[in-house]
Length: 545
Image (tube, rainbow, N blue to C red; front, side, top):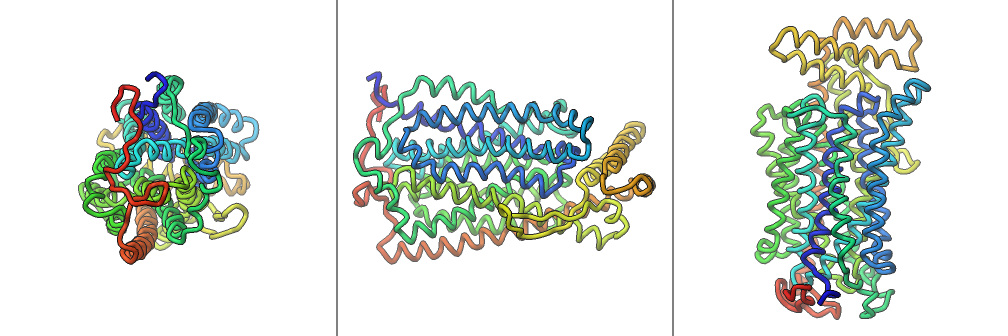
């Protein structure tokens, strides 16, 4: 009995990988204000957040093959080691930045941006290895009810975002509920989960993969790519990645001026996702997985459009976020379940291909595109409101590229000046007059320090711009904040086009499955099995199925 697989403990270990990834994601999403003070603007912030998916996409693209070649446990342990490396890079970032400012101030921002990018990129490689392992593993452990258990597994992601969100709300940025700590402490906190995960994984026995078990040839793993519906699923999962992970990357930042400690919106939506994913099984028994995906896409469209309207009430913001959460909750894990249920002979490869599509899309394009849309809309709104304010805070143009191919060029405000102006506007609302004056002066000093570092201005230009900012700082803050909020709403409205495309795709798949007699779960021989029934897995080490 000692050598038997304990699927309960393996499910917990798999769950913890997503908890660690979620904690890192949530705290990173709240790092925008701290990174803006180092000169990292909206497009660059989106690019760094996109790196958190890019490595994932490439790794999981080949991850299914790696799993089949080397087995589950070795890849999982490798991912844990690399995850610790990523944390170490984050921890070193602020100290290195301070040193670069002293030795080469002109290039300090680009250097720390590169360090953060590669740290997050390594983080995403780890996430890719995790998913390459845990999705087919759980599908293999629970073949009789994959949709239900994959949704339970992926409750670990919002569970981690809840923990990370609480950490961010309590200890990150000036709005911290408890005490503001250095941002890199919060971003490295996921390492605590890694310690628990390492201790659990080290003592567990993992099952053999589909090909290692000798039940089918290695080449059969790629049979899914000969199916047109599977190719449609790949495209749709790319759209899911763009929407779900792209919006999650920006949610805290875009709500920054609308909700006190805006990470609470992420915490709330993550709590909804966490709870909802435990109920996917009963819902799927009422409507099949494709029907669930269709309904979810429609709800996501409505939620994003609502979030994109001019909302002044915090209660309405949370109501709109609730609708959006109901839309996105089941999408990712249910898609993986469809791959497992319809293409069981493809083992880890089918699930890996879908995951790669979602992550590569958001990594290359989604996160940065939302940032570009927000930045462009912010600049347009500020120009229309007060051109003089725009001139004081403008930061030139950025070009969004996919690898080296330019996609769009967009204007931006200087990120450091923008952040100082928005925080100065918040400080003006402090009731205590002495404290208010002190905080406003602090934010003004931060804005003037940004101008001092501008390498495209000579001394006379710097002096002129500093004088203009100093004379208008209090009034400028409101204009900049209003424009930023407008930009965020427009970016969310434009993103609603993505789930619209998803809904059309799932409607087409619904009609396709009806034409062939309905959606059915298949075994490895291509025979239908009843969801929630059919063949039972091997017993746990405690003797329970």
